[in-house]
Image (cartoon, rainbow, N blue to C red; front, side, top):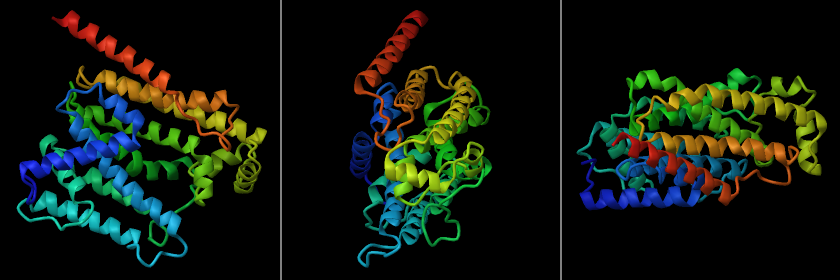
Length: 321
């Protein structure tokens, strides 16, 4: 039992996390349907925690530079989240404060304990999220190199893969599967960055490495011009094609790691990887029109991929009998 949570409270906490995942993470939520029933709540808890923190960071961006007086400071909220999670993990008999995030933390702490997830992955994640909050010592809104961006993604993406790995289970020691899990998280994150260039520009952010863009004659002013006109300059198209190739290479490096997972979870992870990589196809198919259309994998495509993976998994199980 975590903190002052009864089994009923824990059930409620996991249901809240499931609803958050269903509402905000359609692709991931679909993929979790391929997981065994006992694993799904843990994945929902991990997703809900990431979403909770992401919402705090989003408010930091939309409120800046004029902080709304009735809204708590996002940096303080991140500190509070970390403090309360440490309490839940290190002092399980101590009640958590009656904060709005309490239920998510109850489910998360139970998941961490149940699957023996290293707490460091959550502190790394929160440190990267502080890089998104104006006014913090770690804040940055541009990344000069891919190495700098990867430093950010080590917490914002790779850490997520490492959090999820013990829940999924492996056929090798967890440490052997960690590099591929981290790479898959990074691949997902870079896909998001390529899809959301327009959104991020509106928030005063660029999550693409400046030196990679500059190699194709793209600078910040050109990005802003493309956003204002809704037209993707040919130079930017070439830069995006290059970055998509880099992104696909990360997916390729992550792919062998799926075979290191418990066989029962491989279809779900292949589904998530296939669907997320398909966003890159949609960007290319639109002629790199990332300023007037958001690349989305159609529902029929998502269902089709899931159906293929589900059928493959069922046939594989039947053959093992």
